[in-house]
Image 1 (cartoon, rainbow, N blue to C red):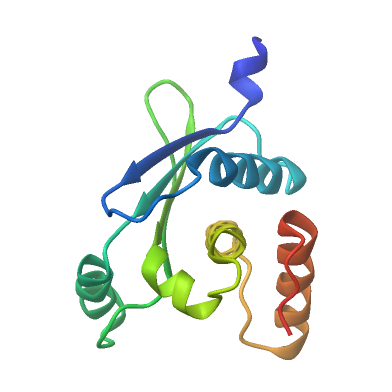
Image 2 (spheres, rainbow, N blue to C red; image 1 turned 90 degrees about the vertical axis):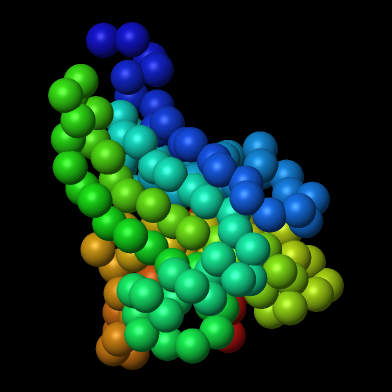
Length: 145
């Protein structure tokens, strides 16, 4: 089996205008997936405008206004045997408002947050939250209080 078959495939769709270091996002995604023991998979990452995010947020969560990240799990296997993990949608403008001092760190954090949700992590309870936040910090170096 070739090395590429074990490497996560990250597909980025940038549909907004803010400058983004897509390479840093791909690296963060790969580090998170490998750290979680997920190799040969495909992950879609979409960078969207506030308006597109607000539309998605209303349609899928029933909540008004844009949010910073949404995850849409698939966890299917395609005809070539590749695990399709799902989609993480990020709103860079919302991320920048969350952390104006370091918006790129915030985007990496949100991406990892979304990936962890796709992998089944949640933060409803205090214990689950602590575990998820520790994993986010491990993969991004960003501490969330």
